[in-house]
Length: 197
Image (cartoon, rainbow, N blue to C red; front, side):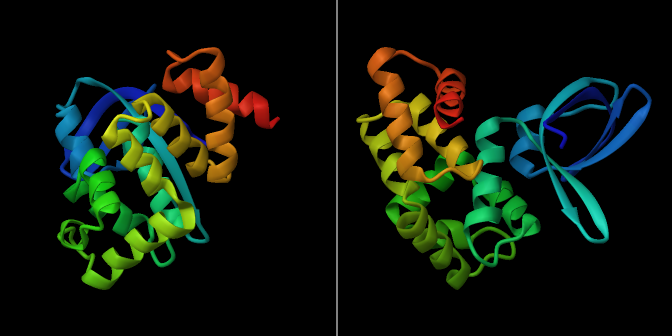
């Protein structure tokens, strides 16, 4: 699996970058939010967080400016029925990570439905499945209210995106925070992964 790419921008189009990594050009699909955040110009260095999606007839690289964007993308394609990579990219193109989280927490169907190719029913399904089945909306709501740290919420999202149960992720993070209340996202993820192994 490819986790990230660091190279030089060979071509830059709004939803597609070609990254030259030591003479090999990797075509990477990106949401508009990533394109805007990076503002890639040909000849400039770039680093992208990567999700490699393998189908029977293609291997597609999806790139993101941050771990949070990649985690939301993975959450959408892995945990919400009927959402594929193209729809997830469309959602992230229309909403940044914080706006998406707020829309799920507040049940704002209209905000999610504004994304290209996402109708009202799909938006309702996204909210329902992320709130009820995955349960991450409660973590995002706690983050908005200041009862949990952004690092803890981001670490929980990352662990859920990696396939761990939310209850287990939350418990592991809570135990880590007892020992080190100032722990950052990466430290919490590493500690939780050690806990699970």
